[in-house]
View 1 (tube, rainbow, N blue to C red):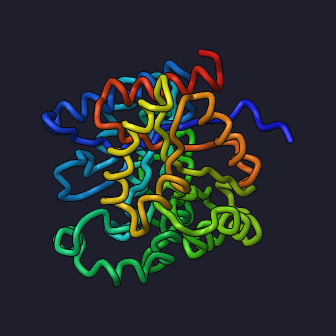
View 2: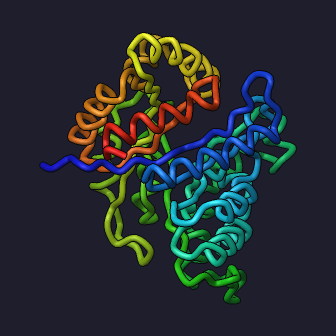
Length: 315
């Protein structure tokens, strides 16, 4: 099987690093998106979080409108928009508007996490657990709105504006349950390896086996989200990775740090990280990875993405 060239994309949590403020963090998000476009990364996605002082993006669609205006070609999307907080109509209206502004460039990546504390979730959308129980109905609403066949009380309702190219639909998750939802509704599936302890090979296989073709996606599509830290030397990469691991453990992980470093975070020189990505590509049968890099220095974060692009594509 040919495994090169791999496709790489960027998942930005939009961190507010020490001594920075939210305005500066958002400026760095723009710089990262422009750097990713220049280097040849396929997508730039932003994550949604609420009432977290160390993360600046509470509204992916607002930030993406700005990112789209500051870039020319790279695909832009949410990774993830947290669907249980919202009505499907509002979600699709927002992303149809983005897709009308930036035709052929917009991804709607959805998730079912709360993205914050219990109290902020209740303040945002009420009974979050009940909203999660209604996730299948919400996913059905999103897909029907994108396909133009959504009805409410017997009346057709459209999510306008209608873009020339429909947003590409993805579901992000960390287990077989999320993979089953993606398969049922014919969305692409992103396995979040950087925040999961389960067997990714098994999860992706389950998604492909259960996949039901849909109008917006006739074949299964897969990505893997993985933590990466690259530096000029192995020693420097390990030093930078310790802060990366500490942050991601705090936000996403319940396992031991050693498990985190081995399973969820690829660390080293770009040539070594490239080899590990190629091995994962064969194991998971995917050709695209979306990279999460939480180095506590904005310029060294950019350099990590530059090193990896150079190793993979000689840019």
